[in-house]
Length: 313
Image (cartoon, rainbow, N blue to C red; front, side, top):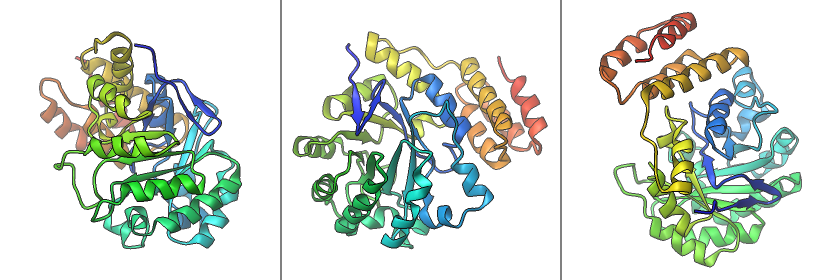
């Protein structure tokens, strides 16, 4: 199968597989291992604009990037048009900026940001127009709606405002993972919109990605890529050959070892993040449960590094 190309503004991606922005996951080291595995574009985790404007050490760490981290998108959310104007100078290190209009967290929607913005698509349009003055591509990540489906209306307003692409997570904000993603809605939007549509939700293997690429221009992987960066390699192999390699525990642990080394290299050691990711890396093997229990009790970076270095079967 010929690899589908994807262009977002002036950014031409090497393939149509993107790593989603994910809180507590997509720091610089994690983006780098996913890129090496085949992700063509990766994003910072979502940052509230006020976090960026009142910079602290934690926010600076989450915004850290490198020459190998290209192209990279900064994902932001907020509810203040004035703050969107003020954030422009902070976009300089990034190749793209994405507005999160999909986060369902009560902490975010309570501040009238994230998926709450779907209630007011004209406000999203104003935010896009402001960000377009930065001269980098501007995209939006949306859901089908907040409590009711208004995805087509929102997508048309976003396109008209000048956005370069839209990512659609095919669930309402009030729907959890137990509700299947409704890809048919992505298909409807794709038929009515002229800018690239990236599909997100319930993509776990090569067959899923292939089906999504039949109805969208790109595929964004989220939870299936947590603790399994090589899912990008396996999906790319499937798209080219129709054969998908099996998950391999030892190869996966090597990815985790790389993540730990990169965390040290870039001085981005966050024990809680490493433990969360590690609990996702240690899977699909004998004694995975007991290994995870031991791992979660470790306290220092050196203990974690020693344990993981001895994990291969």
